[in-house]
Length: 286
Image 1 (cartoon, rainbow, N blue to C red):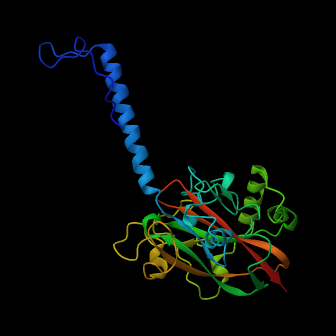
Image 2 (spheres, rainbow, N blue to C red):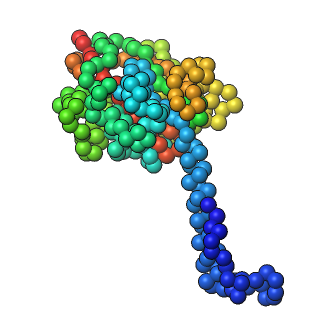
């Protein structure tokens, strides 16, 4: 906001008599006022960009279950920020968000099982099976970028996120994220699936890879960003800010068996300094 209570002393700054000079103290005041105004404007702009985002919906993520139970009033707001999500997709640490999500808006940490999530798998897959997965992007928060699905095969580490009596530490959250990065489910593992390079990435940059999935061009005139992937109707999935669009892909479940493990979803924003990381509790049989 523009300061109103402090006035520049008339003896130091005058536009009514020559010479039109500004003393050092008045100059300092004016400089501080300008910088404060610029900073405030920048905060408002960033806040405006941050309205609405996305979350994993199929299989049902812990975030979605929290939303359906009424615990979470903004499932698309589970964010880690500020980070450096672009162009190196693996550079940004997950921080407090962890592999399953932390929603600061409602102070819910999905890395620990809660009343409505994390106690049992929501779906059973077969090792080697190709399955459809989906997330929901909010109309007001389609930041473009790239996204991925991952499975960590270190059961001892994953078990820390399955214990309702234990909240994983920040180091354990990052260790799990590192494991999920190693367990990337490559887009190209699904036969006949189109695996494009991001139109917002230049060849030679770290983001020039097609093992991740990509959204469409952020500034495209039609079918833009992540909502353009499916081209679904507005409101095809639920968000609380502006309504959402589905983003659907297929993944191949690895040759791995677990009675209870996690499927992790990560979306790296192109437009903003944010990543979105959710998880779903799954079972994998032989």
